[in-house]
Image 1 (cartoon, helix red, strand yellow):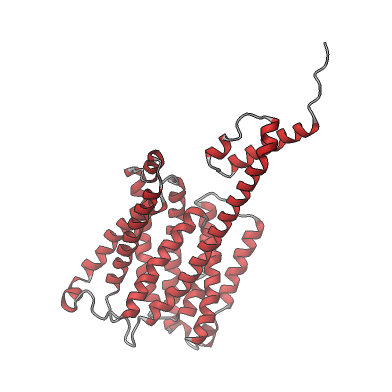
Image 2 (tube, one colour):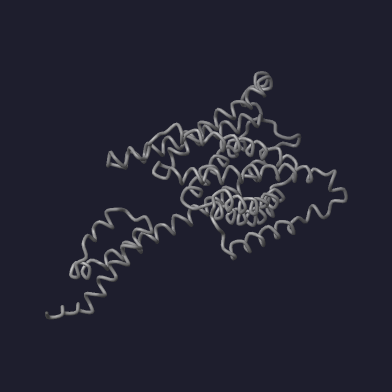
Length: 343
């Protein structure tokens, strides 16, 4: 029998490119419509349309890169503004307003923002099946938001106590203890291995944190100073915050088909209930002085900045990861130090 004629070289290359592209599309979670549009391998179709698929892939990667940069910048800016806003809302005698009221209103603000954003998201999605996936609900999945909401409530309340003892610059230096704690939790609780370069980077950032405390070295009695107590509170806050961040990243990605805004609403509603317990504790103070006693425009700015921090972080935890977050925190330390020179 005659041997089959060999396939033309150009056609073979087109087939190989098609197979490679299919693998890349599957690996990058591309939309099924893009993958399905390739269909069966056909030399003429592939040769004609392959450049279109490649251009679409390049455009998608560029959009992802720009979105990632935007999220990181949002975290740096909001994390920079957070301690400065809280510190400036404090009077000479401490916080004139009730901290518990601010913390719960931060949760209410985030919940309302996410509700509006979710409504807009659902309006823009025309496919009823996709729309249903965005708000798919399960009580088993929902209860996982209780633990991080409790941890975040503790961390957010501790922030005000810390900044009553130390200034924003020192806080950001101490807050970078989170770099190492998050790296360890990221490795052992999420089961994600870090390469050698990432571990070296984390260790260098941690070492830089230890060596960047000039005010502490100038104190003769550090153990009796407010910086020491601020250090202890900051250590507790970073451990609690790291645990919450790693846990919420794990759950956000486990329920990735849900809209980020719907996930946030589930987290924030528990945050409102948890922080309501602080209001019960402060009931006598609130009833005697009023809910908004001591409020100024600086308190309103603090509330909006705190809400912006939470929303920005949620996008990083779902679409990126905690390692990106701790590097953004390191960037916030430098921007805070620069801004503090003029404040």
